[in-house]
Length: 173
Image (cartoon, rainbow, N blue to C red):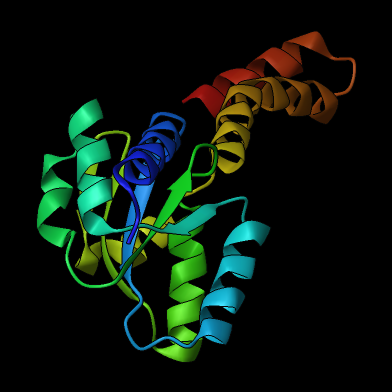
């Protein structure tokens, strides 16, 4: 049985994990073998996700220390694993969705991402979220679109400026 000092150390560790993460996912791993858990941890590591198993009571204490995790309290029962991520907030959902499709375990219970609560029926929605890099790429593409229209308009009419201006005006309509 862990001592009070050991429990406090674990609560501090969890608190640091929560403070350093923008998202926490809760999964029920009941019925998974040790090798299954090892495989799942490996998949999470590939996605740059921390996956830990903590006692629910210690997790709740850490969440109480920080505040803002009230919506997850109802899910702190059974045998839970916790995925923590800072960068690609949908990474755990993608790993879980693929793993569950193949193994039918673990059970996704809930997630809190940047203060927003997601329930167990929203795993597909979370997995479909674009990564930060993809969103930035989309924004850059949108910003470059008007410039490419100007360039294509100029190229279409060659050196004839009046024709280029007319082409750009027609594209604007």
